[in-house]
Length: 153
Length: 153
Image (cartoon, rainbow over all chains, first blue to last red; front, top):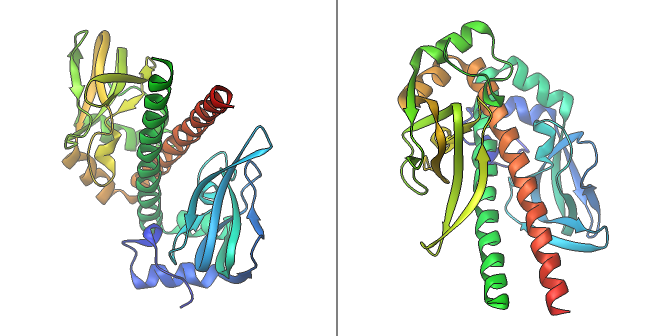
């Protein structure tokens, strides 16, 4: 099986993992390559296999804000493909040569539509992941607020 | 049926909604009443029926940061009860007299465990909600960064 294990597939059984592996395409990537672009229509989910992926967001279409660096096999990007409005929330750019898996949206929808158990597990894992990111962001906002308070008062 | 419709239940059929309504308890709330506390173990999910709920987060255990105000019937709070580590991410305080529904974690787990279709729909709605909040927070961080850049340069 090519599929690397990560948080999104936690709790799935071997048969369910094989079903996902069967629709995942393994691709290589080169440093600097953009895999998906912030704001564009999401067409696939990506799973890191080897190498590193930089997640970035643009400010005023000029400044790039680094959001995080993915290095662990099994980490996902392009997860906007799983929820409405089906758009990529961030840009993913290859930071060091490696490989990733690509799963088309139509294949994901089929798997989740037919296997509601698989769907329930994946969507629970995704919600957990987003909540964690949300709490990290809230912490960051608090740090910014504290800096502003110190600057002005 | 007492259950107010909101984004979390979008896509559920009448039978599924009735199952949820059957385990939801209707409670009244008074201004200033704290319904759940940031960081504490999540025991129930809450759904706003009437009135308003203020969601807040503490900074340095002194300053209160207002996160949002819920006013629409069907809006939820205490959603940390649905995902690990099962803790309330924010404090919810009643901002104007009203009523809300309370669903115990054990009842939710039963419904989601037995009805994987219901579970898949609810968890997809929840993931979508968190992703939306996450993107709003990222926008807020960008505004803070822009303010800092203007202040220092």
